Image (cartoon, rainbow, N blue to C red; front, side, top):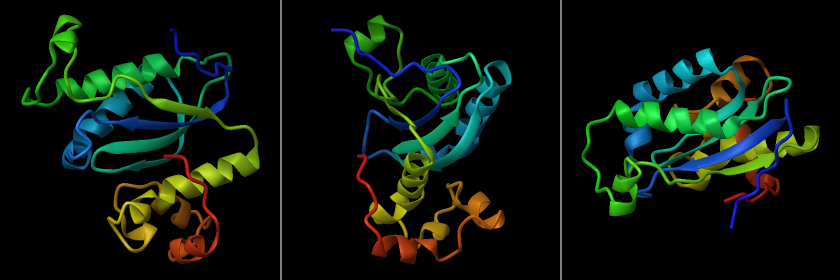
Length: 175
């Protein structure tokens, strides 16, 4: 069975990308390698990051694709590969991954959702920024250092205590 994705050139997408080991902390422990992976891919294959949060073992991102371009799968593949190459080989690698010359760091697939309108975008940005609170890493979303919430606060789009307000509203569940 072939997995079908929403493929609309120039659209905005919400992504969830997970490490294979859901107890790992590789992403936050190797943030510089992750940043470099994103930068190198963005230079070759541009896309705009609207919002992002990096958790220890997964990340959420909202990207706006360039007009006429929909190949987010290529970008994720390259980001995963660049990040993996930057790390020493310490993970267990299954024989099927070894046969495909894959590392055992990332889950093979990722989840994507095409953003439909401004309301949908707002809900996904809220979900993304609230994720560290949801997972019990911090009490305030603004206390999580690996989040675009700081950019939103600096631009006056959110208050520093936004997550207190978010607790009172019905945030969507996307996990």
